[in-house]
Length: 244
Image (cartoon, rainbow, N blue to C red; front, side, top):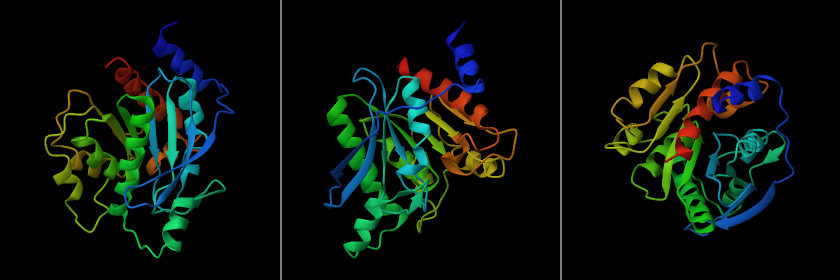
């Protein structure tokens, strides 16, 4: 059975993706804010994925996603960004610390948390990082990835112009050559096409779901209709990155 067919079989057959390899860690952003994260290690030789949540969420967005990525040979780190709240019973500890410090961060301020996580992972693994972003963090992932030599590629779920600067993403992706996977709900797909139209990366994939789909990385939850199709196209993209 080919790797592609095996992947489809596993995704559609109810294969168990449970894991016990989840470790809580902390590290600091450049401004000193302590960032909480869940580390899902597999093997130091395997590729590394940074998982970044959407608004009102936490690292809990990836509680079932990260173990599945582990099963396909990817080390993962899911972070709490300074803008967010609670999901799947997991409180956003970074956002709580930001509030206690009197900070009033905007979406754009969470870029510092993503950059810090990229630096942390690069120092730990000594290899380029893949960023997976959800909603506003998908937009920040594009911005961080464009000119950062520590980033191999990005997979973005529902990116958009969510910032005070309504051209932030458009201006940030000029000349982008990094491998790119983009998806969204069906309703959002036209806006995503428009947002990313000037990116001419050699590897550029946009998936538009047949069903209504979901906003952000919720599309990958097993409770979401059509999640299997999202998984198949995402894993095909990630398989290409493994060979770079």
